[in-house]
Amino acid sequence: MYRTLIAVALIVAPGIAPAQVIERVVAIVDGEPIFATDLVARMGEAEHTREALRAELQRMIDERLMATAASRNDVHIDADAVQHALDAIRASSGLTVEEFWAAIAAQGVARETYLAELRDRLVRVRLVPILFPSHLRVEEAELRRRYEARVAGAGGVVVRGRVITFSVEGGTNAAEARAQAVLAELRAENITFEDALAANSGGPFGPIEVGELLPALTRALEQLAVGDTSDVIRGGEAFHILRLEGRERAEAPTFESLHDELRAELMSERFRWAEEALIERLRRRAFIIRRI
Image 1 (cartoon, rainbow, N blue to C red):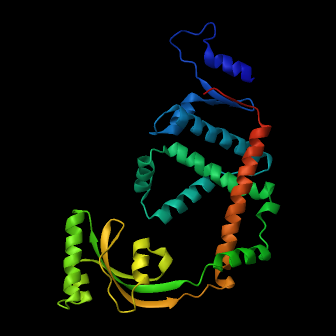
Image 2 (cartoon, rainbow, N blue to C red):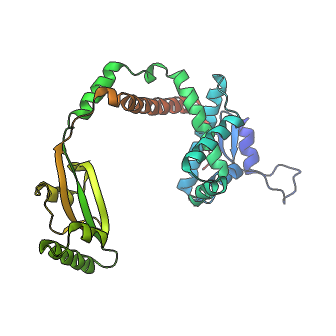
Image 3 (cartoon, one colour):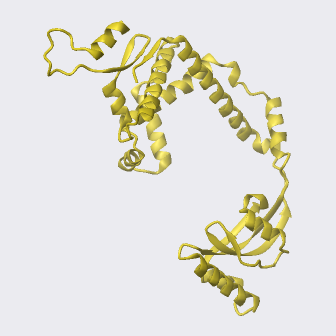
């Protein structure tokens, strides 16, 4: 069958008028064709480079393989299931239907492509647990080991305070000069930190672990006592003046408080592994011809 399809894709059969266009086949998956027009439609507004076309074609091949495997395992995703998932995604985004599809289009993704990929995702979510059930089991002992690794470095220093920020958007020199002038007023006690904050950008920060801040801010806070005000610090795209209002040792979270998060984390990792293993198995067992 596939030889016939390829031949039809490449030549004009006798008796067909020259003006007629013969559909080009870009891939054969177990005897079933994928046509060029379908591939182009899936590309949407994305740039049609050779690499991009090949990547999209591979996704279409994988979807075809997954759909076949789903059918063999009595997994069926109907239009209602796709619509239900689509409605949930759109609702979580807070966008109207028109805004949602406009956002998808702005990313260069065609509606047809998005819906096909959503259907494929639903197929995988149902199919993988059927074919790899043992790989998706998570034992309590595994959760304990993950917890111990997670909290091994926990219990750091937590700080809170306020920060005045001077963006460099209007010029680096001007921002630094403004920050230094405000700091001088603070040092001379001509203004309070609250007054300076009200007249500039910034606000409270924390409680937050020191290591989660920009390195320059972390170094500055390590030198401050509670109640102190920092020098002018360059961090990211702004200059900052910090006031430290609290410092304490963070307590490690309990196993119980992290149990569900750790389980979801492990399940996600296991699912990705099983998903990749499944698609590799399907590719090896399929007869695939690519024409691009």
